Image 1 (cartoon, rainbow, N blue to C red):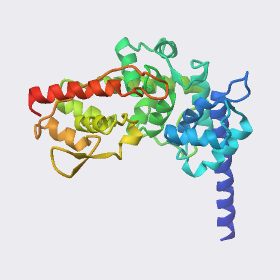
Image 2 (cartoon, one colour):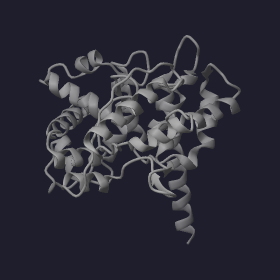
Image 3 (spheres, rainbow, N blue to C red):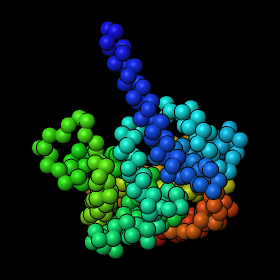
Length: 321
């Protein structure tokens, strides 16, 4: 029993040291030398890389608790992350995370947490990644509101790859034995592993035919894209509310006025999309692209929301859905 307690204590110390090293690696990535800290606007990105998934409102509350600083120094960042530690989900080796971030920082020199199309092309130079596949990477890992590859999404996707996908990326034979102490990404070859991962993501993305309903349904499910009900947008206009972020909308319900007292989810489930793709129900799927009118919200005055509802109503009337 005493040996078990000592082993548990050593494992806890090792886990704590690894967590602190991961926090250090993320701090260094977003560090601004001129101001001796990381910009407060990068806090959410840093938290996401460490395995948390806060909403913008939660981050704003955290910043208020920290005294609304423009920059967060090393001590403050460590203390804050330590307080959030129960929410941290990542169990990846700290050295592995450090190596990936060190490599990506060569191209994201400003530490903004994303790669532009030009920066992505620079990183992939010599890999024969076509324009189509560059666009596929951007679609898969884009940052909301801009056409940049989101580094936190890249890292999250990389960690979540299944065994077979990881073997394909690493160029390994699934039957090869891998020691328990081996790192997922060997330090000396992190550049080629990240590049291979992006190539694999691009090739997987490019395989979908979005003109085929079944392929579209599969694409939406595997990338976890959720469709928004047009009637939910109508409900927002009637109640004079702006549309909300994906994280906040997932639990939203509204009352259908055309079906008395029927509550319906704001987002369409993947099962419903699959039913549509199989011919089990009728629906019109519209794709809308619009600019952000403010940094804090894409449509603060609900002008674009009103236009979306007007056009959705025309579609509904024309096709009787």
